[in-house]
Image: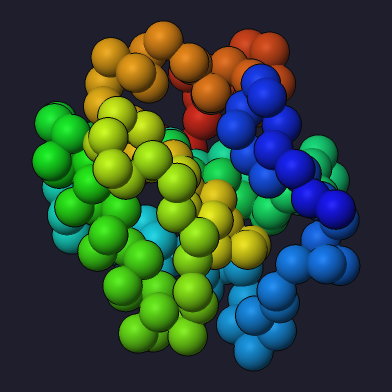
Length: 139
């Protein structure tokens, strides 16, 4: 049975039990996610490769929106675009408050934060190796 890691809020379960988008690569999904975030003016977009470090996903993308309304809109549009382009029904948590929205597309996990909330949780520090926080692929 899957559950959520209390430290990160990410789903914890074997990938074998999760839906597979075998006709699309993780890189194609990641690229679509990054394009969507850029189109919607997300700020400080950071991509973190998780392969070999976590079974949760292949990539994590973290970004910020300027307000709760923008955070919710970025997340909603991303989920819609993933559904239209890949047929992925992404799971979403936190859209109601708009402080931190998690979008789980299977191979790519996306966190959209308000800047203050992002600073408080500092997910980049949790997931990047020591010394690489400033060196993450920022778009």
